Image (cartoon, rainbow, N blue to C red; front, top):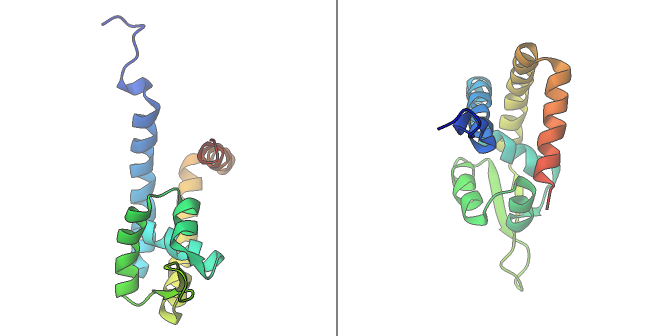
Length: 143
């Protein structure tokens, strides 16, 4: 292999996945204190932003496969944090909402999320973090 050949260190996927694991671990330490994972926190926040959202809408917003979303929502429904009610008899679509317990958990987790945000920005830099978020959000809106 010559020095001009790309290596795994040149791989965008490798770098993004490694960074995602690092960032996830940081956020897990914080929001985990509220009894949810970082992934569950993002789902609770997304449902809170759009009460009554359907599974399909939420899957699109979260850039997730619907079957993955269903599996991710099961523990939140089991623990009484998220409700799923059929919209009407003519459709199989269900409306997702937070229960009172879900809103309370989201509030507690949001306080921990603020701590995680501060820690990340202290380590990475506030301006760099803002640019990174902008770039990553642009990436997920590419088609």
